[in-house]
Length: 462
Image 1 (cartoon, rainbow, N blue to C red):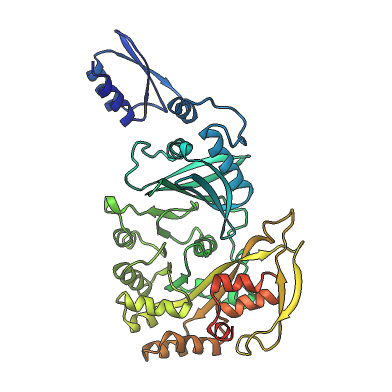
Image 2 (tube, helix red, strand yellow):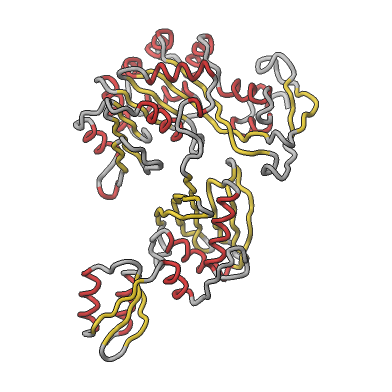
């Protein structure tokens, strides 16, 4: 009997060999082993197979040769303890992402809290392989594969809270980097009112959603809250009388009553193929997770022109620039004017802690930005918050594609001209929304500059 062959076979199916004698082989595996694995093992060993069903933690403990204890906060303990500590801290501190980053001398763990990375702890490089293996096992990834990136998803219960985590691995100079995205069940209701839009902007959004057909776009960088805005809109539209179909990458929040399809490019299931299939499924409302290319844009625009309400996202800096982006994808301007109903640009800024914020001498800004001095707040930090901030608030720029904008679009006007026309018709651009939040004491001027960038009129004066 070839022991190396048996070990390789078990490794392929994520099983471990517990004992071998002349009559039988005892193995441990999580769940029920496949029939193919059992048949291959019997053929390779010519022995009776005894199977023990273990949970993942027990399997991982055996693999790493470490003793598992119930103490989840000991940083000098096993990889299991360190991983549990990191996950517990990520949940307790409301982190959206957890980074495990290897270096030549040590590995560090950082948490992204309210959009900013903060260091959590460091651990010896010698322990890195075990920590990475632990995360991979949780995410059902191949622990032996270290040469190529891997992606996975798993659920984890922390202090009674169910978290859905997306895991991504990346080979780098000193090992493998791990990044986890923590997706919580929404504590806030999925309503339009809960998004925090000003009343005027909310009314425009509601009017666009009431349209029988047309294209509604939400734009902004990754992590700006676009998905939550779309899900809130879908939750509002979700009624027994309509058929809502979604194509997403990935499905971040399952919603009862909707048809949600996740793309799998390697299997040929792309945004384009799913969209074409959805159009044959008698939809009233279609949600496309992201318009990334010309073909997807063309299908979405045509669907919006032929009796469907289409909601989607693009990555641009402002609402007006979304028009330019679609044009670069090959969409003619006359198609945009007939399909587009509304464009929302949004950002998330950290919210000042009301318990420890302090008002400083007012800040003087150029007259083009503010006609009067702006309140200047400082983020002090206290036991109720994290570095002076707690949670985030959204800034919304709502651009309604009215007749004046349609004429400007057809006249091939630039994004800046279109933005000026929109402002004359009541659109408040992102920087104006940010400065208003500062006036109300909701955030700081530094935070607005961090997220939106310093305007040229300010940068030129500094």
